[in-house]
Length: 600
Image (tube, rainbow, N blue to C red):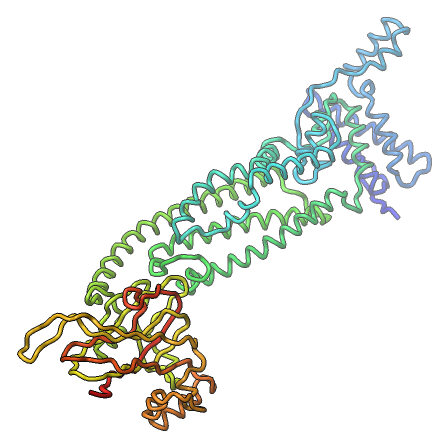
């Protein structure tokens, strides 16, 4: 049931229902605004209200307790006739009557000249800002066709111009490597291209006025602004307005902006959390989330990153606020949409935040790049000094590698594709502290030769070693040098003699040392070497790697003959010049070398 209210019009009280009151209020306000622009307009408006009051008195005298919207419509149609309001139009009508009653009917029906259309954003039929609804009014056509056409053309533009990938660019922090720094000018060029279908809509929405009064609607439609047309427009708009439900487009806008609000809320929370985390722990966040290669440089650019974060939060925050406002105004009942002034302010703030973010990012990246060059120069000096201090006989050694080589008396002869010379862990007993010769490269052939030299007297010798490997092509070797020393101390030349033995491939499981300890291998030399080990060591070998062994094997070169006192060189190698086999990838380990005389 409609609620009745009491109104005061020209000092008289009337009962009128809500819908009728809204229609009457809009009509009187529209006509008053129209006539106030004219000379003596206030008196004309007062006369109109007085005439309305007289017509309401007539209805009241007829016994109507409350005025309905239908009765207000009848009053408007009577009051709205031009010839009953302005004396100028009355004089024109009298003049036409004097010219002859024959032309009277035609004169009454002559339409006023249609005014030139003026472009407005149609606020009565808007989905977002009413731009496309205004285009439909100005250029003609169905507003839904304009909307779908705009969506399809925008999608095609984005698809064929690769715009989809640019969504992430405003939220990236392009700091930390050269590729991302170069990407910034690309962003500055591509973002306007990406936004090209959107910018005209936004600019028109900001610049073009929106329809706020019935006069604006008439100008948008190209109709003459007069009391009759104003009355028709006010009546039509009021009758078509559904106060209890939203239009389909309002609901669609509400759903779309609600989804965007949810997505932007997640992005906003993530950015805010990362920003707060950066303030608390700059080094960790820079390393984990911001892809800054050298976190030592973070203090030099921290202020710039903080400013970028603030501008990024402002950017997303503005979008989030506008989407939430659009959602509430589309789905809510009492929240009006933003005015053009508000839209312009928020748009300018949003653009300012983007420009500020990109500019601050460029500045911070430039500052980082300059500091990075200084840092690289400093590191280069440090690295050169460190490399020089750790280079021995033309080979770079780590501290642990050099300490092992010095302690055990090893010499490095060749090294290529070698990132280390020794290793610790997975020793045959399972002890991690034992260090041994080792190399590993899964992708490049390893060329590695480490040896020792001893002065040997004539006799038969045996070289043994504990070894393991993942690939073939790894050997132990023993050879005489290219000179001998006679009893008088003179050096005599002789041909080299060399013997090699390939390391068996057991990876890091099993091995004949582990097998000998458990069950025996039948090899007397292996048995002899294993029996030399203390009982406690053999027990550790048996239990190593959960009872599976670590792949270590004893290999040996037997009966190497030395005819006269000379230097013997022995060690481990993968060099094709010594082994005759091409170098291979993979790894090997070698330790516990023993050169012993076994006969004369």
